[in-house]
Image (cartoon, rainbow over all chains, first blue to last red; front, side, top):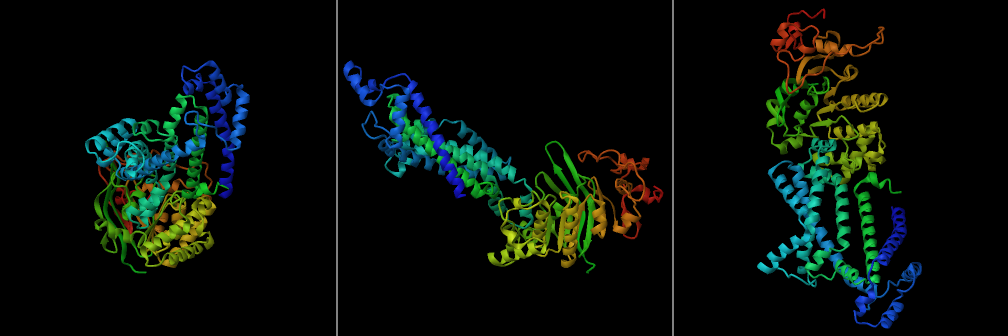
Length: 308
Length: 328
């Protein structure tokens, strides 16, 4: 197992190099000039030239890529053009907020999705099942920003229970987290239902019943664990995507997260921030995937025996 | 061995109800079994064998399945009337079941010892440790090294898995064991081993057993009594000797004709013509008459009642009643 994890971590290196190359190239060929947004329209050509030289924007593609990579390998992600802060500092300011938001959303989604998915499956075609599946269909179709706005209208404007913006207390996390999580909860519920339906028709479920086991334990101990693999995949994907920043939700609720930082940076051609941000998001995504694969092994011994 | 009836099924009728049709899986079935005896339940796929025994365990999926009428007396107690909580105390403890396919009847994410220990913990007051110890003893009993208890089902071969299933079924010394084609999914050499094991354990624990099979060889090997099922009914019932030596029903004869005989020269096996009838639309009269080479007009009109052609040997056939099929 440890060997497997070590190998997977080693495989991160080429993946991240690829990500760096793609992002760097994309930013290089994107039209627009960071100098415009830093100095504004009234700057003299000399000043612009001097700044360009200072930022290292005058070299060719290979020269600039070489410079970026060598600095990166020394742990230097560059300086943010807008704030003059180190990019690492900028990420350290924003990324934890996104992680907090994504974690809340995913935990909320898992609790809701698993519960209703299981209920739906064991009561297939019942009234409860139909209601849950209809709501989850709406949940999947509804854009989270719209849902966020509605929730905000209800809980912040009408009822005044929760704050509409900011990110300093736990109460601030609830609304954006729920808006983000509803979507994931809906997909998790549907995935859990279909996976459970497949499992509860298996012979070993009859075996468990034939042993005299109670229905609750048949579902909890025998069925659920076998149905978890596709659910874990879904949860992992959702979490990975949420870590990439929920731009719209972060904008609506004014959360200083990684998504908002990235959008601002792209608009301003703030190359170092974009590159650093994407790198960190990619790393997070890969790590989440690794955790998902480790969870597979934890849940299913057949997979465990393949991780040698 | 007591002569008291351990299991008595009276007029059991089970239907599967779907949106547009009703499947008559089991109709008016009567069956009984005494302590320690083995009954072979023989018939083609779809005859209702598994449905019958699953009704005894009450593990039919309801809906779509529905037990329309009948009684299932176990030790004089009607299982169909028991509250589910009481029924759960009987499952696994008094009555256990071995399923057809060992590849799918074990939970892939639990170790085999855990799965055996589960049934022990459910019915016997003992600690987790004691249950585990007993589970390993059971494994040893069926010829698996006890230290393999911590392995998962995918680490065992098919025959070994069926041994595990048998160990699980016998873990609480049940008085009645249902074996639903326990060897069908295994290859022939392993079949023989598993049968031998079941015979040995059955004798050791004095367990009564219903063995579902479509292999008459297994019946000859292990069963005291035989019930032949066709389209949801028992068409012939008797001791093994009755069935093998004085076959009464044309369907049973057809089954025997499907077995190759090594003592006579045979070029082809004789199959029973036609297919089992559509259970949503069963033939009127005798259900076998469209396929029966001896069918008369009466067979197409009148449903045959059970007829005792010799003491303890019942045949549901008009020809048997008229004594006309001795030369069949």
